[in-house]
Length: 141
Image (cartoon, rainbow, N blue to C red; front, side, top):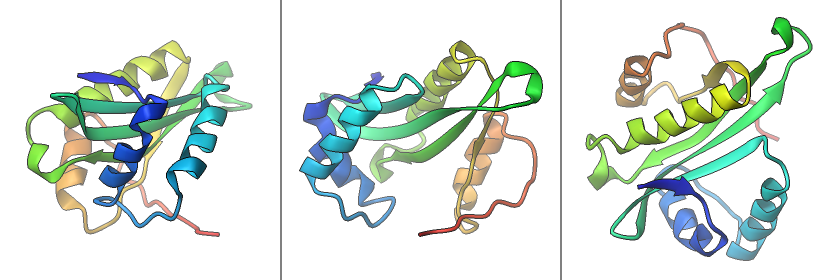
């Protein structure tokens, strides 16, 4: 089941994030950030649950453009499915919900970045229609 993140799920989501990245936020810090996200309808944090437990998640942020016929674009980040739940369609369901959010938000396109070594993830994204072979850059502060 795909649903919006709830405050009571944040600790479990932080545990899932350990499979994706190193993070330093406490549950309290993450809840504060989440509460700010709730105030802005340009943010969407989704979780996938099996038997009431989080097994996947994705974040989408709708951004405005000055050009592109008044349309917006969507940035997708933190896409993750627990390793033992991959290849079951969970990632596709998360991304389908993100597509629906993008269309509702008048987005003309979406972008995401993926680390070069994540070849299986790249195949997944290509199968979902992410077609352009572009070079992405990420700068950390």
